[in-house]
Image (cartoon, rainbow, N blue to C red):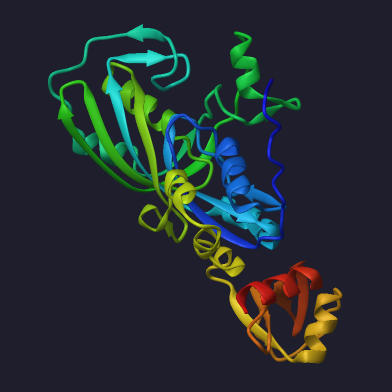
Length: 310
């Protein structure tokens, strides 16, 4: 007979956990594990990492989930290893080899780097979560179907490439949102003329969050509950670059109820709004002297955060 499962008593938890996602675990599985360890009521992430990939995965809890979408636009930095001479069905080492070609002895690494640096168009891979007619592309791919995908504008801000072995490229790149590193590796292989697929992928930064600030699931498991909570960054860690506006008590209450406030603030598209005691109230934008509410914290969330920090 199986022993009854222990029921976890959930609680309100608010903040951002920087997780170093392990190899082989989906982003959602990692999220659910961290959520269970923190006994959190509500959680979400800021964009997925493939099971093959490791590295920075910001997880949002409670009030932070309201701002997780803002982080999807952040630039990302990756360390990747591409194996030359073979293309696979998935663009990485988990797929089957569909094309094998000899690798040239000489490769002009600098010419390759310049070719893939800067603004370009990229066709998303079939093995991706992008939707076509309400269905994820990977579902078509698993059924053996290939559908037409429209190329998208991407920007490769930085790209460093080295060739430590004849059949291996190692590269580090900072890219805009929507860039597929598997596709970048494949495209570099095609430019060389031998094909390629990713052997490993690690995200080392997303927006202001770097891998050296992350905690692993194993480290989280070994901590006490208080130590786990201490790993959380405040909710406004998701709002870098937002202008700051502070409201007095009366204006803060009205703002939280969704009312616009008037003041001499300069025009701003992204504003983080705080109370006089430095408590985050939500986001807004300023137009023609009006502070227009965006995503707001609920009074209960503010009270829970105050109780936690006190």
